[in-house]
Length: 577
Image (cartoon, rainbow, N blue to C red; front, side):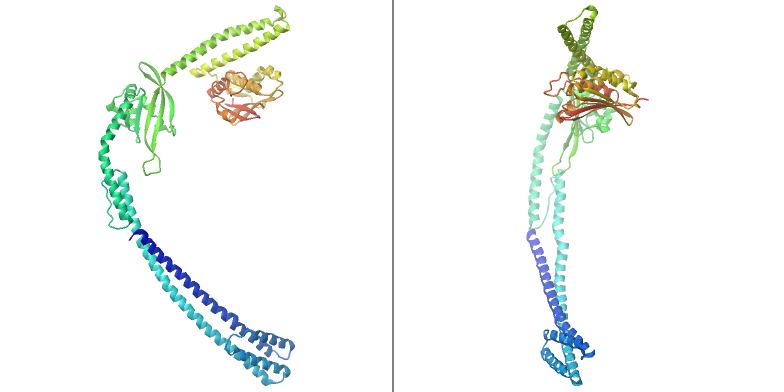
């Protein structure tokens, strides 16, 4: 018999018995309810009416209120005739009460009335006893049949509880164990279910699958060996060093380039734990240290590495790639190994150094003649050499503006070369907060007056000094104020402030200009970046250099901007003593 048929038969029989049990329970409960209602509604009410008529008779029937009480209950009794012979007794009671109303001194009539009431009560008490026996019989039958049906349901459920789970779970457990062995490449595993149900069919299919997998494994080993050799050849002929590790950080392979720059031989590395190699090889130690200090990111990590190779200093971009897969039949991703790839970027580094040196040389050479031009312009404005007419003064002013712009550009380029070459020289010492802010305001005062912009300074009196390189921090403040004036509307206000936050001082410059769109917020500190569509002049280096200067002093820089309302640039430095 099929498992489905077994389940349908067992559960169907149990369902039918439960339905029968529920039907019997409802049937007998309704019968008991009807029997009880008959006793309460009919017989009990008659006894109550008779009791009240008896009380009226005992309490002097000659009194009007007792006569009324007797009459009311007699009328109710006449409407509640339920038993055989009760009508004749009630009629006799009504006749005797009518005669008594004509002659209250007739004691015989009183006796007759008492007898009639007693007979009515006796008749109903006998009926109550009879109906009670009927209810007891109904109750006994209900208990009997419900017990029988309940016992049968219990036996069926008990049988299903102990037999059905085992019949299903045991083959499933054996099948699960066999599948796990197949997953571990034990293709000789077989199932033996001597049943003609679904599990028997499943066992036959499983055995067929295992046989085919066993055949496939035997035929695929040679192909796998060929593919393995092909991949090894490909990796060994790569011009970039490649190192492969397994999940236990043992070396799977190192190609020829990796062996050459590390000075190792194949027999020294294959199958060895990489930490063992790192103990005796500085290069290997620097390459794998991220695997042990917890800095490895989820996807890839790229770090520049300087290595002495090919009789010169070479630069490589390191990429550590975790190899993660979800094994077949599982849901949790597992780390299967790691690949360390070194890309040779020496030619690009050499070009970058050449570019930086060229910019530094050109900027330095340009600064001297530009300074001479500026000095000459100052002499031209000296009245001792002669008066200039209006057009000449305008031309001189225009040349001065262009000269100042050129000086600023060359200064930014020189600063950038310091940043790129790592030759920034910082002289961090206590510096006056007020002096640096006042200098930045004074330097940009003329530019602010040209646009009728108000420069507001908010610095508490207790803020006296900050640990900073005064010249470079002043340069940063001057650049931020200059930008705020440049990007603010005419007749606006630029706020320059400083306040204490913990052990740091926060400098801020706030403008009320256009603001920065959210999509450009994370790019404003990039070198040479300028917001697309802006018409303001600049090299796109000022904010990048400012950030480098602040971070070189151990501080940090931040930006808050709401598009259409303005921006706030701020940086934090340690407090002075």
